[in-house]
Length: 145
Image 1 (cartoon, rainbow, N blue to C red):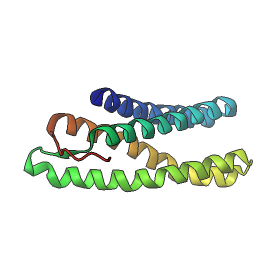
Image 2 (image 1 turned 30 degrees about the vertical axis):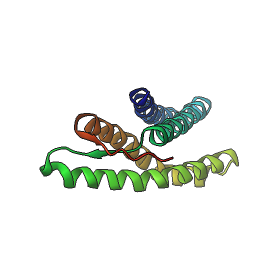
Image 3 (image 1 turned 90 degrees about the vertical axis):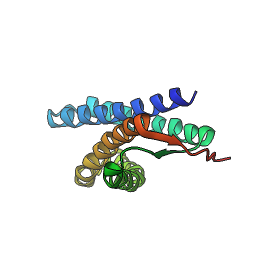
Image 4 (image 1 turned 45 degrees about the vertical axis):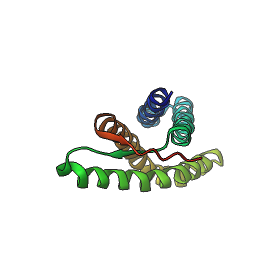
């Protein structure tokens, strides 16, 4: 169950990043309807990631880094920036979506230029963190409940 939740979480966030890139490409081509669908797909996939990640965390606790000491600083830098930007990504995405639904496209576009790199960084580093912990993770035994 733990491995399945981890895989579902990592694939949903990676696919959300891909849907985001598709959405950007579509709006650059002027296809607003397909852009809208791609971005809502990216949002739903990101929401699914959150559900899968929180379920895994609640049921199985956390995994600590147990890899090479030389990589520890880089790993924790990526983890810290990933966590901070992931916390910013959700509210920022909701704000950008809200502006689009209200038809405030100048604000939507301005903030989307901030959101897209943040979202992509979070998606990419999420996959990287998952990969590192699959190889070098150690169980902490900490369960949320």
